[in-house]
Image (cartoon, rainbow, N blue to C red):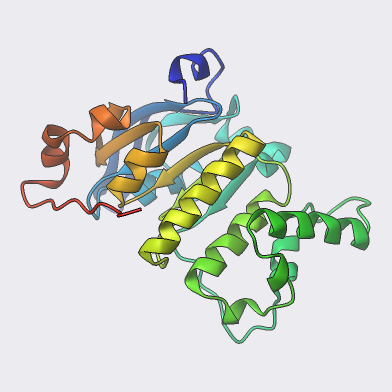
Length: 253
């Protein structure tokens, strides 16, 4: 990815001096960064660093103390009808596994619920989305019977059943085995190339971040470093973020 070329466009996400207080605890402190069209940006940091809190504040799911957030050129509180341009998958998707909801029914919830779209047209969009994530044969399967990796791909289909400019993913690789992580990362990279959306993701897998992301935000409440993976993930920065005890895991594929 050519970041110099990307940065000739207006940012998809613009966060300036964002501070989030949870109770009496300052969970995020004066964080500023920008994400440009077509980029894949990872947020890394130790547990309790404020990564998910940052994401939730960006999406206006929790209030922030100070600073401002713009997404696709609009203040987050003024997005209105443009919310559909953003896809979000939280770290934990909690649901009753006995609930009789099929893969097709879940993915169809990602379509606009108002308007004149006919049932057959909706089904066509769902089928295309499931084909993108290689789950076209699982359309009638109850979501409660899916594996962790299958469920993540269904949620990705939910996000991509209509065009998006930005995907925000919180620990997308959680609950996926190491081989599945590689497959999922490749799938996500191919879909990004085909559909030209930007990605902001939280990840603990530094090897996958170095392979697939083009910029990295390192944080522990504050932003500690921000740049390309070969710079942000050098030994000195990683010790500053995680301490001397960090052990890096590398995939064999």
